[in-house]
Length: 132
Image (cartoon, rainbow, N blue to C red; front, side, top):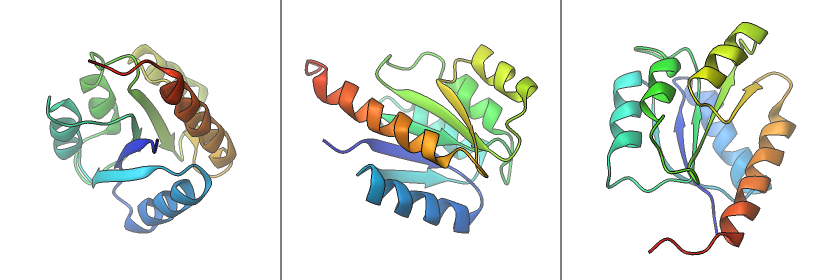
């Protein structure tokens, strides 16, 4: 089973490279993207949207990734939200954790950790009983 992944990232080059990397190494299925807080929140909180993983940048064309992750706080426990940012400071990590983020990764040096998280999430989903 592929990990249905939605990406909120305003930099097209980073977004495209991230999708290509995760498709190759993890076998994700990129089911959508957005560049703004409004679009990310609208898609991720829509009851008809089916997703397993959201990857969210903090600095967007409009709004903030913090608003996106806060909007996802009432998600299904099998839906994971991670932040991928250039500003993964201790303060940012703590703030994201308070908002219910499952993990925070630095774009510059923690891509391997993100890949490992995705692989683990795939294993968890494949072992979970089907949702009725």
